[in-house]
Length: 338
Image 1: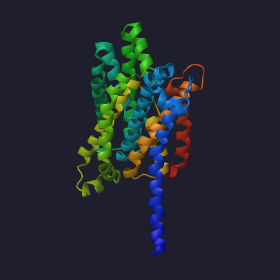
Image 2: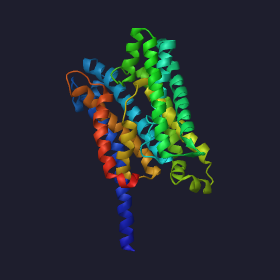
Image 3: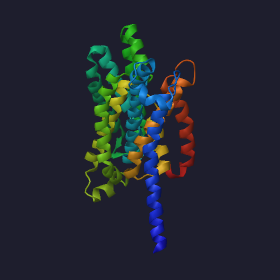
Image 4: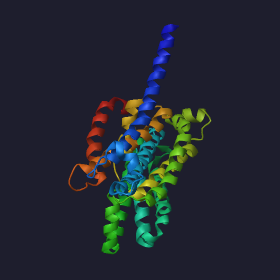
């Protein structure tokens, strides 16, 4: 009995330690992010700078704070969306990018910019979400074979749809005026340097809706991860629940992509890192993916704006970090994926 008690105590203590670490990690990185930069602000002076009328105050309040919050929002949305889609569709290679959601959202946002202009910025998000849903609907339709989703066909269909919308974005760039093309290109490659408080206010509400929706559905995600037959035996409407998970993932993805553009690898690498830490149970995987995704984006953006004399687009940094890290994780987990 004492041994069993100690085992339970150790398991609970270990779980509590994981939870505390996953909460503290992004908060610690957030504080460091605000302090570090070409214009350094010491950690102990951060609270006072917020209320001073100085150049540090302007940099902190108008540049670093909105950028850090948007980076965390992007990482959180991509982390939980990737984890939910990989678990629901039982495919470790699935992500919003692979399914064409990101490309669809990018095309919708680019189309809105070209046709409506930046004066109608509030319409960019609905357009991004609409085309994200259209893209994922096409992907799911193409990947169905005899009424069933095949992991291989899902990835192939996603690649086709993603390429299709990437081609449409290129077509838009060719057909519009050169100045608008530059705006679209700068936006599509993924950037955080131009983020303002308006961007944060615009993207945050729908990002929160998407994240909360996936967190509420994490028990359904768990049931779907066991397979269609097992989920049906538990009384789950498989098609409806799967579409709802995809809908919330699309809303979360489109809300941030419409502001930042396409920043690759975050939605793929964050869930796999999280899975190595807390395991595959969606009860822990989905909330933890929010923390890991947000932390990953803070680190990547901090590198992008400090490592070189000129700022490097954060999408380049996430690719340089994500690709070799994913290769390492893939080799370690190859027996599970097979």
